[in-house]
Image (cartoon, rainbow, N blue to C red; front, side, top):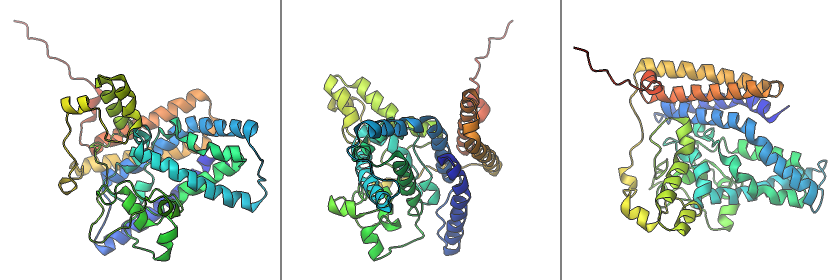
Length: 371
Protein backbone atom coordinates (compact mmCIF):
# COMPACT_ATOMS: atom_id res chain seq x y z
CA UNK A 1 0.00 0.00 0.00
CA UNK A 2 1.34 3.44 -0.94
CA UNK A 3 1.70 6.42 1.39
CA UNK A 4 -1.02 8.21 -0.59
CA UNK A 5 -3.42 5.32 0.04
CA UNK A 6 -2.61 5.40 3.76
CA UNK A 7 -3.54 9.09 3.77
CA UNK A 8 -6.84 8.21 2.09
CA UNK A 9 -7.60 5.67 4.84
CA UNK A 10 -6.61 8.17 7.55
CA UNK A 11 -8.77 10.97 6.14
CA UNK A 12 -12.07 9.79 7.73
CA UNK A 13 -10.26 9.66 11.10
CA UNK A 14 -9.01 13.23 10.64
CA UNK A 15 -12.50 14.49 9.87
CA UNK A 16 -14.09 12.50 12.70
CA UNK A 17 -11.67 14.07 15.18
CA UNK A 18 -12.30 17.52 13.71
CA UNK A 19 -16.01 16.89 14.23
CA UNK A 20 -15.42 15.87 17.85
CA UNK A 21 -13.31 18.98 18.49
CA UNK A 22 -15.95 21.20 16.91
CA UNK A 23 -18.69 19.61 19.03
CA UNK A 24 -16.64 20.01 22.23
CA UNK A 25 -15.89 23.64 21.41
CA UNK A 26 -19.55 24.41 20.77
CA UNK A 27 -20.58 22.67 24.00
CA UNK A 28 -18.02 24.70 25.97
CA UNK A 29 -19.04 27.96 24.30
CA UNK A 30 -15.62 28.51 22.73
CA UNK A 31 -15.75 27.26 19.18
CA UNK A 32 -12.39 27.69 17.45
CA UNK A 33 -13.56 27.14 13.87
CA UNK A 34 -14.44 29.50 11.02
CA UNK A 35 -15.62 27.94 7.76
CA UNK A 36 -13.34 29.90 5.42
CA UNK A 37 -10.24 29.36 7.52
CA UNK A 38 -10.93 25.63 7.95
CA UNK A 39 -11.54 25.15 4.22
CA UNK A 40 -8.32 27.05 3.50
CA UNK A 41 -6.26 24.96 5.92
CA UNK A 42 -7.65 21.61 4.79
CA UNK A 43 -7.39 22.73 1.16
CA UNK A 44 -3.70 23.54 1.61
CA UNK A 45 -3.24 20.05 3.03
CA UNK A 46 -4.97 18.62 -0.04
CA UNK A 47 -2.74 20.68 -2.31
CA UNK A 48 0.35 19.53 -0.42
CA UNK A 49 -0.65 15.88 -0.93
CA UNK A 50 -1.26 16.46 -4.64
CA UNK A 51 2.07 18.21 -5.18
CA UNK A 52 3.77 15.58 -3.00
CA UNK A 53 2.77 12.86 -5.45
CA UNK A 54 4.97 14.53 -8.05
CA UNK A 55 7.88 15.46 -5.78
CA UNK A 56 8.19 12.65 -3.22
CA UNK A 57 10.61 10.72 -5.42
CA UNK A 58 13.12 13.57 -5.15
CA UNK A 59 13.59 13.30 -1.39
CA UNK A 60 13.28 9.51 -1.22
CA UNK A 61 15.42 9.09 -4.33
CA UNK A 62 18.26 11.22 -2.97
CA UNK A 63 18.03 9.50 0.41
CA UNK A 64 18.16 6.04 -1.19
CA UNK A 65 21.07 7.06 -3.41
CA UNK A 66 23.10 8.29 -0.41
CA UNK A 67 22.17 5.15 1.56
CA UNK A 68 23.22 2.76 -1.21
CA UNK A 69 26.58 4.43 -1.87
CA UNK A 70 27.75 6.08 1.34
CA UNK A 71 26.06 4.41 4.33
CA UNK A 72 28.62 3.59 7.03
CA UNK A 73 26.49 0.69 8.30
CA UNK A 74 23.37 -1.18 7.19
CA UNK A 75 21.00 -1.22 10.15
CA UNK A 76 18.64 -4.25 10.01
CA UNK A 77 14.99 -3.54 9.17
CA UNK A 78 14.02 -6.61 11.20
CA UNK A 79 15.25 -5.15 14.48
CA UNK A 80 12.74 -3.14 16.56
CA UNK A 81 15.67 -1.06 17.84
CA UNK A 82 16.31 0.19 14.31
CA UNK A 83 12.76 1.55 14.19
CA UNK A 84 12.86 3.05 17.68
CA UNK A 85 16.26 4.65 17.08
CA UNK A 86 15.06 5.77 13.64
CA UNK A 87 12.08 7.62 15.13
CA UNK A 88 14.27 9.33 17.74
CA UNK A 89 16.89 10.22 15.12
CA UNK A 90 14.28 11.54 12.72
CA UNK A 91 12.66 13.69 15.39
CA UNK A 92 16.07 15.09 16.40
CA UNK A 93 16.79 16.07 12.80
CA UNK A 94 13.23 17.34 12.43
CA UNK A 95 13.92 19.70 15.35
CA UNK A 96 16.81 21.29 13.41
CA UNK A 97 14.83 21.33 10.18
CA UNK A 98 11.92 22.97 11.98
CA UNK A 99 14.22 25.44 13.73
CA UNK A 100 15.79 26.42 10.42
CA UNK A 101 12.27 26.84 9.06
CA UNK A 102 11.82 29.71 11.52
CA UNK A 103 15.32 31.18 11.48
CA UNK A 104 16.33 31.08 7.78
CA UNK A 105 14.18 33.03 5.33
CA UNK A 106 14.44 30.47 2.51
CA UNK A 107 13.15 27.67 4.73
CA UNK A 108 10.54 29.95 6.30
CA UNK A 109 9.16 30.64 2.81
CA UNK A 110 8.13 26.98 2.70
CA UNK A 111 7.17 26.47 6.34
CA UNK A 112 5.15 29.69 6.66
CA UNK A 113 2.12 28.00 5.09
CA UNK A 114 1.60 25.95 8.25
CA UNK A 115 1.53 29.11 10.38
CA UNK A 116 -0.69 31.36 8.29
CA UNK A 117 -3.95 30.30 9.93
CA UNK A 118 -5.11 32.78 12.56
CA UNK A 119 -7.17 30.04 14.23
CA UNK A 120 -5.75 27.07 16.06
CA UNK A 121 -7.57 23.77 15.68
CA UNK A 122 -7.17 20.33 14.14
CA UNK A 123 -7.76 21.70 10.64
CA UNK A 124 -4.58 23.77 11.17
CA UNK A 125 -2.64 20.51 11.50
CA UNK A 126 -3.59 19.62 7.93
CA UNK A 127 -2.32 22.97 6.64
CA UNK A 128 0.93 21.91 4.98
CA UNK A 129 3.37 23.45 2.51
CA UNK A 130 3.68 22.40 -1.12
CA UNK A 131 7.30 23.57 -1.47
CA UNK A 132 9.08 21.84 1.41
CA UNK A 133 10.51 19.31 -1.03
CA UNK A 134 12.82 21.97 -2.50
CA UNK A 135 15.41 21.78 0.29
CA UNK A 136 13.95 20.12 3.39
CA UNK A 137 15.37 16.69 2.50
CA UNK A 138 18.91 17.97 3.22
CA UNK A 139 18.38 17.74 6.98
CA UNK A 140 17.68 14.00 6.98
CA UNK A 141 20.69 12.77 5.01
CA UNK A 142 22.62 11.92 8.22
CA UNK A 143 20.14 9.08 8.72
CA UNK A 144 21.12 7.68 5.33
CA UNK A 145 24.81 7.98 6.18
CA UNK A 146 24.34 6.16 9.49
CA UNK A 147 22.50 3.38 7.67
CA UNK A 148 18.78 3.64 8.36
CA UNK A 149 17.08 1.89 5.41
CA UNK A 150 14.82 4.04 3.18
CA UNK A 151 11.76 2.08 4.36
CA UNK A 152 12.52 2.93 7.99
CA UNK A 153 13.08 6.57 7.08
CA UNK A 154 9.80 6.81 5.18
CA UNK A 155 7.72 5.13 7.89
CA UNK A 156 9.12 7.08 10.86
CA UNK A 157 8.71 10.32 8.90
CA UNK A 158 5.03 9.49 8.42
CA UNK A 159 4.66 8.56 12.12
CA UNK A 160 6.27 11.84 13.17
CA UNK A 161 3.90 13.78 10.91
CA UNK A 162 0.75 11.94 12.00
CA UNK A 163 1.63 12.31 15.70
CA UNK A 164 1.57 16.07 15.38
CA UNK A 165 -2.07 16.13 14.26
CA UNK A 166 -3.60 15.91 17.74
CA UNK A 167 -1.49 18.70 19.29
CA UNK A 168 -3.23 21.37 17.19
CA UNK A 169 -6.12 22.09 19.52
CA UNK A 170 -7.20 24.57 22.18
CA UNK A 171 -9.60 22.08 23.73
CA UNK A 172 -6.89 20.16 25.63
CA UNK A 173 -5.12 21.92 28.49
CA UNK A 174 -1.79 21.19 30.12
CA UNK A 175 -0.92 17.52 30.69
CA UNK A 176 1.55 17.64 33.58
CA UNK A 177 4.57 15.36 33.23
CA UNK A 178 3.70 14.57 29.59
CA UNK A 179 4.32 18.20 28.63
CA UNK A 180 7.86 17.96 29.98
CA UNK A 181 8.87 15.19 27.60
CA UNK A 182 6.62 15.28 24.57
CA UNK A 183 5.18 17.79 22.15
CA UNK A 184 1.65 18.35 23.47
CA UNK A 185 -1.15 20.85 22.74
CA UNK A 186 0.04 23.43 25.29
CA UNK A 187 3.63 23.30 24.00
CA UNK A 188 2.56 23.54 20.39
CA UNK A 189 0.13 26.41 20.98
CA UNK A 190 3.19 28.37 22.07
CA UNK A 191 4.95 27.42 18.87
CA UNK A 192 2.14 28.84 16.71
CA UNK A 193 1.89 32.11 18.64
CA UNK A 194 3.28 35.47 17.48
CA UNK A 195 3.53 37.00 20.96
CA UNK A 196 7.06 38.21 21.80
CA UNK A 197 7.22 35.78 24.73
CA UNK A 198 6.42 32.79 22.54
CA UNK A 199 7.99 33.63 19.19
CA UNK A 200 10.23 30.92 17.67
CA UNK A 201 9.90 28.40 20.49
CA UNK A 202 9.05 24.70 20.93
CA UNK A 203 10.20 23.16 17.65
CA UNK A 204 10.00 19.50 18.69
CA UNK A 205 7.80 17.18 16.63
CA UNK A 206 7.26 14.22 18.97
CA UNK A 207 9.74 15.03 21.77
CA UNK A 208 9.92 18.45 23.43
CA UNK A 209 13.16 17.52 25.22
CA UNK A 210 15.17 18.88 22.26
CA UNK A 211 13.83 22.35 23.05
CA UNK A 212 14.78 21.99 26.70
CA UNK A 213 18.26 20.79 25.72
CA UNK A 214 18.90 23.60 23.23
CA UNK A 215 17.11 26.37 25.17
CA UNK A 216 14.25 27.03 22.79
CA UNK A 217 11.50 25.97 25.18
CA UNK A 218 8.78 28.32 26.44
CA UNK A 219 5.81 27.44 28.62
CA UNK A 220 2.30 28.60 27.85
CA UNK A 221 1.27 31.26 30.37
CA UNK A 222 -2.36 31.74 31.34
CA UNK A 223 -1.73 35.46 31.79
CA UNK A 224 -0.74 35.84 28.14
CA UNK A 225 -3.06 34.02 25.70
CA UNK A 226 -1.54 32.91 22.42
CA UNK A 227 -2.20 35.03 19.33
CA UNK A 228 -1.98 32.89 16.21
CA UNK A 229 -0.84 33.62 12.67
CA UNK A 230 2.24 35.28 11.23
CA UNK A 231 3.72 38.74 11.66
CA UNK A 232 3.30 39.34 7.91
CA UNK A 233 -0.30 38.12 7.51
CA UNK A 234 -1.40 36.40 4.32
CA UNK A 235 -4.79 38.16 4.03
CA UNK A 236 -6.02 35.71 1.41
CA UNK A 237 -7.64 32.30 1.08
CA UNK A 238 -5.85 31.65 -2.23
CA UNK A 239 -3.88 28.38 -1.80
CA UNK A 240 -1.41 29.15 -4.57
CA UNK A 241 -0.59 32.59 -3.18
CA UNK A 242 -0.31 31.10 0.32
CA UNK A 243 2.61 29.02 -0.97
CA UNK A 244 4.21 31.83 -2.98
CA UNK A 245 3.77 34.93 -0.80
CA UNK A 246 7.05 34.83 1.11
CA UNK A 247 9.07 33.69 -1.92
CA UNK A 248 7.65 36.69 -3.81
CA UNK A 249 8.47 39.08 -0.94
CA UNK A 250 12.05 37.77 -0.72
CA UNK A 251 12.54 37.99 -4.48
CA UNK A 252 11.19 41.56 -4.47
CA UNK A 253 13.57 42.65 -1.69
CA UNK A 254 16.48 40.90 -3.40
CA UNK A 255 15.77 42.68 -6.69
CA UNK A 256 15.48 46.05 -4.94
CA UNK A 257 18.70 45.72 -2.92
CA UNK A 258 21.58 47.73 -4.35
CA UNK A 259 24.41 45.57 -2.96
CA UNK A 260 24.95 42.02 -4.24
CA UNK A 261 25.77 40.59 -0.79
CA UNK A 262 22.41 41.88 0.42
CA UNK A 263 20.66 40.21 -2.51
CA UNK A 264 22.00 36.88 -1.21
CA UNK A 265 21.54 37.62 2.50
CA UNK A 266 17.84 38.23 1.98
CA UNK A 267 17.46 34.44 1.57
CA UNK A 268 19.73 33.34 4.43
CA UNK A 269 18.91 35.85 7.16
CA UNK A 270 16.06 35.35 9.67
CA UNK A 271 12.54 36.10 8.44
CA UNK A 272 11.77 39.81 8.53
CA UNK A 273 15.36 40.91 7.87
CA UNK A 274 15.62 43.46 5.06
CA UNK A 275 18.59 45.34 3.55
CA UNK A 276 18.94 48.82 5.04
CA UNK A 277 18.42 50.58 1.73
CA UNK A 278 15.32 48.51 0.90
CA UNK A 279 13.79 49.05 4.33
CA UNK A 280 14.40 52.80 4.01
CA UNK A 281 12.79 53.12 0.57
CA UNK A 282 9.95 50.64 1.14
CA UNK A 283 9.26 50.70 4.90
CA UNK A 284 6.80 48.30 6.53
CA UNK A 285 4.82 49.10 9.69
CA UNK A 286 6.08 47.39 12.86
CA UNK A 287 4.13 44.41 14.16
CA UNK A 288 2.03 45.20 17.23
CA UNK A 289 0.38 42.14 18.75
CA UNK A 290 -2.31 44.20 20.52
CA UNK A 291 -3.39 45.64 17.17
CA UNK A 292 -3.55 42.26 15.44
CA UNK A 293 -6.85 41.69 13.61
CA UNK A 294 -7.85 38.40 12.03
CA UNK A 295 -8.50 38.17 8.30
CA UNK A 296 -12.22 37.49 8.20
CA UNK A 297 -14.03 38.72 5.07
CA UNK A 298 -17.79 38.42 5.42
CA UNK A 299 -19.28 35.95 2.97
CA UNK A 300 -22.95 35.50 2.13
CA UNK A 301 -24.68 32.26 3.04
CA UNK A 302 -25.16 31.18 -0.62
CA UNK A 303 -21.43 31.61 -1.26
CA UNK A 304 -20.59 29.64 1.88
CA UNK A 305 -22.84 26.81 0.69
CA UNK A 306 -21.28 26.95 -2.77
CA UNK A 307 -17.75 26.91 -1.31
CA UNK A 308 -18.60 23.96 0.93
CA UNK A 309 -20.22 22.02 -1.92
CA UNK A 310 -17.29 22.64 -4.27
CA UNK A 311 -14.84 21.66 -1.55
CA UNK A 312 -16.71 18.43 -0.78
CA UNK A 313 -16.68 17.49 -4.46
CA UNK A 314 -12.97 18.19 -4.91
CA UNK A 315 -12.12 16.36 -1.68
CA UNK A 316 -13.92 13.26 -2.94
CA UNK A 317 -12.15 13.58 -6.30
CA UNK A 318 -8.80 14.00 -4.53
CA UNK A 319 -9.26 10.81 -2.52
CA UNK A 320 -10.05 8.90 -5.71
CA UNK A 321 -7.01 10.47 -7.38
CA UNK A 322 -4.69 9.57 -4.49
CA UNK A 323 -5.95 5.98 -4.40
CA UNK A 324 -5.55 5.36 -8.15
CA UNK A 325 -2.54 7.61 -8.79
CA UNK A 326 -0.10 4.76 -9.48
CA UNK A 327 -2.41 3.30 -12.15
CA UNK A 328 -2.67 6.57 -14.11
CA UNK A 329 -0.42 7.73 -16.92
CA UNK A 330 1.51 10.96 -16.60
CA UNK A 331 -0.83 13.07 -18.78
CA UNK A 332 -3.81 11.99 -16.64
CA UNK A 333 -1.86 12.63 -13.43
CA UNK A 334 -0.88 16.15 -14.47
CA UNK A 335 -4.34 17.03 -15.77
CA UNK A 336 -6.08 15.74 -12.64
CA UNK A 337 -3.65 17.47 -10.31
CA UNK A 338 -4.02 20.79 -12.13
CA UNK A 339 -7.83 20.53 -12.12
CA UNK A 340 -7.94 19.84 -8.39
CA UNK A 341 -5.65 22.78 -7.59
CA UNK A 342 -7.80 25.02 -9.80
CA UNK A 343 -10.87 23.90 -7.83
CA UNK A 344 -9.10 24.77 -4.58
CA UNK A 345 -8.39 28.22 -5.98
CA UNK A 346 -12.10 28.52 -6.76
CA UNK A 347 -13.03 27.66 -3.17
CA UNK A 348 -10.69 30.40 -1.96
CA UNK A 349 -12.28 32.94 -4.28
CA UNK A 350 -15.75 32.05 -3.08
CA UNK A 351 -14.65 32.52 0.53
CA UNK A 352 -13.16 35.92 -0.27
CA UNK A 353 -16.47 37.01 -1.78
CA UNK A 354 -14.76 37.80 -5.09
CA UNK A 355 -16.86 37.13 -8.22
CA UNK A 356 -15.24 34.21 -10.03
CA UNK A 357 -16.19 35.55 -13.48
CA UNK A 358 -14.68 38.94 -12.72
CA UNK A 359 -11.41 37.33 -11.67
CA UNK A 360 -11.20 34.81 -14.47
CA UNK A 361 -12.16 37.18 -17.30
CA UNK A 362 -10.42 40.57 -17.65
CA UNK A 363 -12.82 43.44 -17.96
CA UNK A 364 -13.13 44.75 -21.49
CA UNK A 365 -12.64 48.40 -22.18
CA UNK A 366 -15.86 49.72 -23.72
CA UNK A 367 -15.54 51.00 -27.23
CA UNK A 368 -16.53 54.57 -27.85
CA UNK A 369 -20.01 54.73 -29.29
CA UNK A 370 -20.20 55.59 -32.97
CA UNK A 371 -22.08 58.72 -33.91
